Amino acid sequence: MPAVKRLDQLLSNLGYCSRREARYLLKDKRVRVAGEIAKSPSQKVDPANVLVDAEPLDMPEGILVMLNKPLGYVCSHDNNEGMRIYDLLPPRWESRNPKIVSVGRLDKDTTGLILITDDTKLVHKLTSPKHHVNKLYVVHVDRPLQQSIVDEFAKGVILGDGEEQCLPAKIEIVEENVANVTLNEGKYHQVRRMFAACGYHVDALHRAQFGEYSLGDLAEGEWRALTL
Image (cartoon, rainbow, N blue to C red; front, top):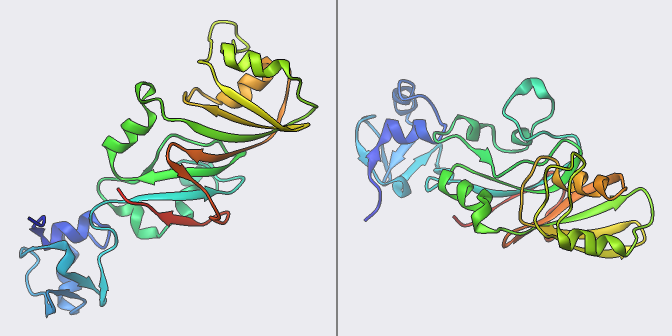
């Protein structure tokens, strides 16, 4: 059975307007339900039958998108922190309820794959350590990589403070100063700290894969909808 909701609540939850403002959309004849001009904000509707400005509702079943994050963008809703990943998405999405969030974070100086969703259960599933979701990073460092780092990562790197040990991770040296790293933890600045503990400085960090999702040919700054 399709989910039936009050029209004003539906439009508000999807970020089109507040519940109070819904009546103005209807007054301006911008909303149709099953082909007919909507007349009552309180009418019960199937989201699949609703059009706003002659367009179907935007992802009424929930949002899951993959974004290729550019350098310099932050994974924050705070406008005071600079350029945000949410500035690269349709503005309406930030007014949705539940709120859209990133699945984990990439720091300002890291590029690549970030997932964005309004599904809190999915966020927990993809970030909980017990689910062991692999993430693949391409790492550029400041000097030639020594083969010994493969064993250090496999044993579990002890971070600089000496009190925190990472789980075993896989590293593949692909060029003199470039490696692919696969891990399933999400400690604070983990990849950078792991390399620092082994005597390297990370010059560039890019996430290419998160679980089953990979960037493929997705251009920097662009996003693609995924199936929830």
